[in-house]
Image 1 (cartoon, helix red, strand yellow):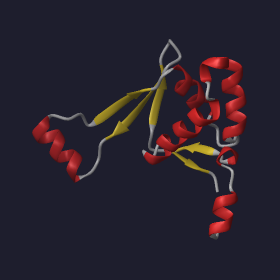
Image 2 (image 1 turned 180 degrees about the vertical axis):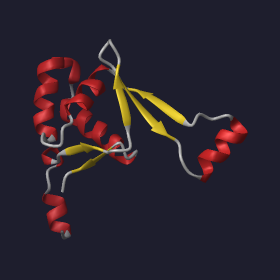
Image 3 (image 1 turned 30 degrees about the vertical axis):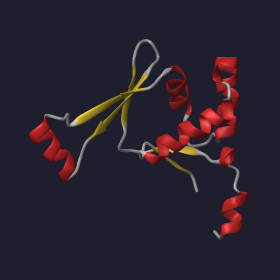
Image 4 (image 1 turned 120 degrees about the horizontal axis):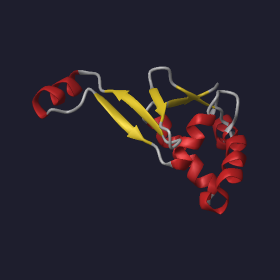
Length: 116
């Protein structure tokens, strides 16, 4: 892919996929908790000397939980945004900016990847 192709790609057309190493659960309230194992030398050092946890529990808000449960590897961000708008209405505004940022953060932490 050259620079021109990268610039013409629409972020909303990207298809998110959850990564396999993230374990997660849904509480009775419908909120999602991601369980992330803290691995590596730095984390082992922090666990031993600073009593940091081996597993971090990341609690998603209602909209993040709703979206997380919809990620199935077949829906693009634009399709997901329509479902979010239907569920949350004006509460989700500005919709595309919020979802773009949400997926950018999930991707930067390695919680998701995008289908090629």
